Image (cartoon, rainbow, N blue to C red; front, side, top):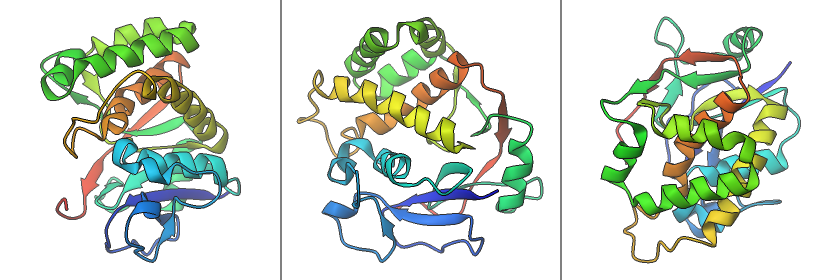
Length: 229
């Protein structure tokens, strides 16, 4: 068995010694080379990083990596932790995945439904357009989408670990939706933070995909390793 956890980064950081963690520079095509593996080779959308954030790394890994049984994403400052508060090892990931389909961060519960939370922080039109695109492409998933956006349960950060097959299936599903959404929203007037719209939209879509397929989830704590850039 082998596991690869790609650590999404846009800056230099202290790389974990565990070889399961592989630094992946996102947006490498349009930024200074940090010396890490980049999302700018093979089939890639590296030049869209300002809109997709860490998802350009997800796209790259799904399209270009096949030599792992399990694949996952974390961030240069956000990592899954074991029960003692240390970084998860390859063996620990694989042991957990023997009993579940996917590892996700511990859920966060807002006081308001996700739809209202998104509306307060972002342009709600973008979420509505995404729902319509999902309904067109994957009508069987739409009812779950409606349930999830009116729940107060959220999985933040696009962190997850699952089998290679599920990893690639999820990426295919997600980017087919976003390919349609890209044609229907305009983010030209957004500031640099809100322009990362697809990164924000995807957080709850991961939950939609997992719930619609009735995957067995293991929630694992996530810890911050350093301050945000």
